[in-house]
Length: 314
Image: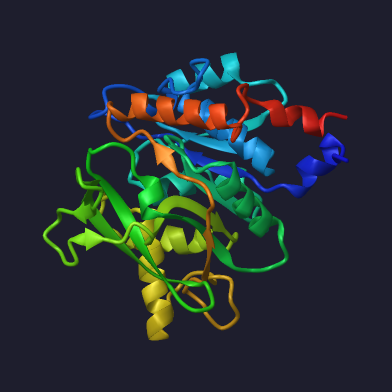
């Protein structure tokens, strides 16, 4: 039996959706790319999946250039029951700056999730994240995917390979560039590094994070320490904090959620059962459309969006 909407809302943490990218190479507003079987935008599918996974509030981070289109789209097409706040990232400096742009809309003592607006982590992966953040533990979290389940088509992408210890904790994130699938099915990284051929079962980060509130201080310190104007990216900052933890060194801001690790970070890896698909290149739009159609045809996802709203109606 579903709980009343008021109770469900009070127990859920916000999902910060990073949608401030300029997408100049893409040639349009990527989160509004039409991928659903009824023409829905990728942002719509993401939000509907997140609702079904247990999230009930969104903080949408928008930029100056594409923000007006996103604001209009959400106001015009999203159901009134969806709780959404808008945060402006006025001078984008990467994903760390984007999360900090939303900080004033987050509770100081509550955890929150983070996702990209042009990716679809899947209801299963998002449910893992929501469940972890609602729990009593104090660990941060990273929903990770098999490398082979994160690729669409042949166009190269960047993927963060995750090193995980025996306890399921994230040890390091290794960013590999120009990752793509060859005609024979092998996956390679054409970035001049070894190994060139990558294991399709290797877990990768897709920027699906769950953070405890203390992380905001760590992110502020990382942004302040960066060269003025330089992009500061979440995977790189997380990897740096993990390196501090491995070395036993201490930073200057907050805690990473584990006693005695001031200035470092502890991150629980949550392997997802889903694919994580998204739009990086213009050719990806048709590929995402086809994959979502297959999922609907198999019964893996509903044909209509926002169906989870009825489950939380009074």
